[in-house]
Image 1 (tube, rainbow, N blue to C red):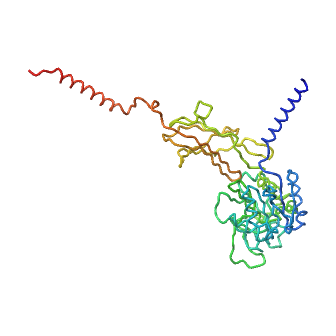
Image 2: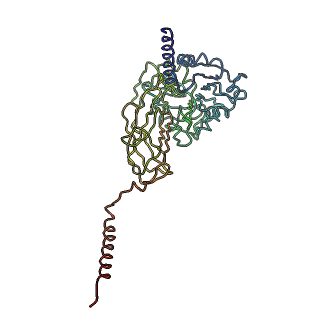
Image 3: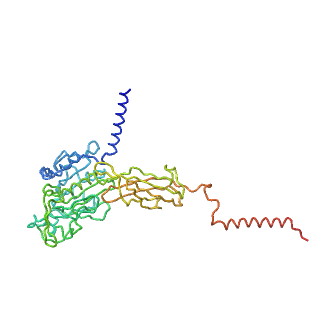
Length: 435
C-alpha cells in the first residue's frame, strides 16, 4: 500500500510540474535560420550569434548561395525565426521574397539587415511592408553626428541617440553606431514604427557623387524600422549589417556636440540595442495574452445565458505579459472596452488593480439584440490583443415592466374620471323620473 501511495504522489507531482511548465512555455519557438552573405560574417558577428545560442536558440547557418536552404518540409515550417544577413542577395537559390512574406504571414519573425550594396531580395520584402530603401550605393551621411574615427572620411559612420520611445528599448545611454543605407516609411501606419532614426542634419546620397536630389533627409530617415503584423509576426529592417558586428559592439564612440566639445563613451550602445531588438523580434518581450475574460451581473459570479436591458453588468479581463522567462501580470491604464452591436453603444476605459486584472461596471442601454463585449488593444511595442464575448440582450418580460409609471398618472386620472362619469350618467339615466 505504501508503495502505491508513493507512486500516486509521484504521478501527481509530475503532473503538477508539467502543468506549470506548459503554463510558462515561451510564446514563440527557438529554431532560427541565419542566412549569411559569406562565411566571414559568421566570425565578424560572432558575439551576436553567441548571444542567440546563450538565450537557448537553436541556430542553423546557411550561405546565400547554399542550395540546401529550406523553409518547409512536408508542408510544415522548419524554423520559427529567420535572420537575413545577406544584403546584396537577389534570391536564395529558389527562395524568393514571396516565400519570406509567406513565412511572415504564417506568424514567423524575420530580421533583415542591409547595407549600401542592397540587393533585390531585401528591397522587395521591404517594399511589400511599405518601406523604401534608398538606391544602391547611397549611404546615410551626417557631418555633425558622426564618430570621430570617421573624421577624415565621408562621415558615413553615424552616431545616433534618437531611440524610439517604446517599451522595446530601455537603458541605452550610449549612441548607436550606424553605417549603411537609409529607409523611408512610405506612409503612416500603425503597424510600422522606427526604432532608430537619424538626426535633423543627416541626409542620404552617394558619398562619391555631388549632392543633387535627396531621396530622404533629416529625422525622416529611419535607420532601423520595426513591423508588427496583424497576426503578431514581427519584422526588423536594419539599414546596416555592421550595426550587429563585433567591431561596432566594442567600439568606443567619440562625438562632437554643437558647442564644439567632444564626448567620449566607454562603449557604443550597439550591443544593448541589438539584444533588445532581437528579444522583441523573437517574441521574448512585449507578448500579451488573455488569461481570463468574463462578464456577469453585479452581485453574481456566473454569466447568464442572456442579459436584460438596463442590467447592471460587470466586465473583467486578466492580461499577462511574457517577460522572457514566465508570464507576469500586465500593467497599463489605457485598456478600453467596447460594447458593440454594429456600432459601439458603450466605450469605457478599464480600471487596473495592479495585478493584471482590468474591470468596469456599467448599466446596459435600453436596446436589445446580440451584443459584443470587445477588447481590441493595439499598442507599439506589445502584441495585438483581441478578446470577444457575445451575449444576447432581451427586452423586459410582460411581468417585469413597472405597473405604475409616474409620467402616466394623468392618463390614469382620465381613465378613472371617465369611469366615474359613466357611472353617474348611468345612474341618472336609470333612476331619474321626469315630472
